[in-house]
Image 1 (cartoon, rainbow, N blue to C red):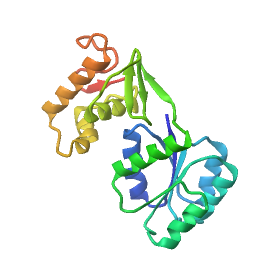
Image 2 (cartoon, helix red, strand yellow; image 1 turned 90 degrees about the vertical axis):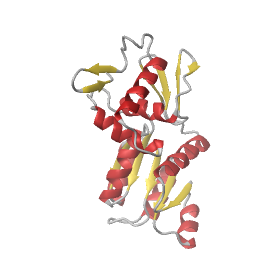
Image 3 (spheres, rainbow, N blue to C red; image 1 turned 180 degrees about the horizontal axis):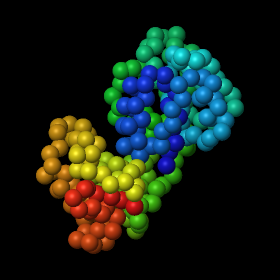
Length: 222
């Protein structure tokens, strides 16, 4: 799974972005400032760093410079500083991309995947039963054949993938997938998509072994 370090000191942004990126299949860790960020980079392996310029402790330019000097990790700046100086400075320090706030989360995900492809940091393929999920390419396959999941089916699969062993209620699932459809997804629609997903990933959709029903509570993937 692709591991991302989010260096940001705005708690609301951290919470919302972490939740969204996790649902998209990324493993996200957060650092509020320069010192904490560099300690994490030194002690753990990250595939990409999302970095704000303005930090409570230090600044993003210093973090980017240190990362690019000692580690081969792609860096994307996330900042409200949309002026030309900040942009040029970021690229001169080796930043791989620069996206100004506010931004659409799905646009950010697209930029992340593009940078990972360009830099060769393609992450790992995750196995769910005999289904292979590549969270960077955004594909799922079984027995070497692409499952051709729709956007909602893929998002639903990622939600299960990132909550293994956890019983997810129908309400939690609805909250996780409704925004990608561009409109509210109702309870009946969720039933249809779970049925369609099972038909594609299960050997016997009538007796599922990947997406299990926990009667009276919801669904669970082990």
